[in-house]
Length: 260
Image (cartoon, rainbow, N blue to C red):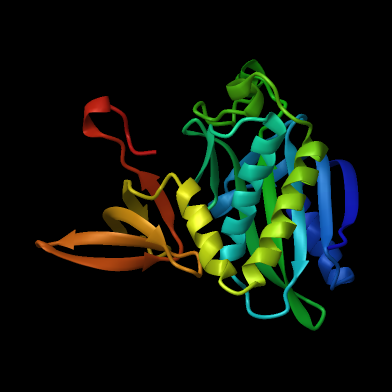
């Protein structure tokens, strides 16, 4: 896959720039990467602080068919495996459904995907924000970064550079995309993702887009990326497929902490 790279020193948001470029010149596999963002966005319109030392980029991918939410999980898997390979460790990173990236249980990155109309087709914009070469002290200086956020440098004492990380992530992502289109590939990728998904096996609380709140146990993921949740209602158990919403892991009651 040939990517067209756009490198910026600073921008408001790589997602905004990628959207403008896709509308002006559709049909290209494009990467917009910036050393700093001053108006980065997370899910639900939340701001995302983007100091130097992190990876702030958006991948623009033309779609040949209908949007596939599973792409989000494939990219999350590629981030985990690509960065672990550079760190030369095998554990310490995991995924929280649907788009959070965890380092030893704390958030160090996230993915924001949106589908746009571009030319005669559609493109998916996959925004990626990763705290990499940012020390714990520097994280604390960013007053708008949540106090429980972390970085690769803070957790492992070392970190690859943003561009080195992106190259490794792209290599894994492209291989995973090829695997996904091979016979049985989606099922194999689903199992790979499930094995790294920290949400599986946990009790969770979620709020859907309509504001409804539910509680259950996350047991698996479907082949379209939906989270399969077991609900116990009046002694009768049933399965629900959660495709969007805000999810919180419920920690054991005896540790005195709130849901994450």
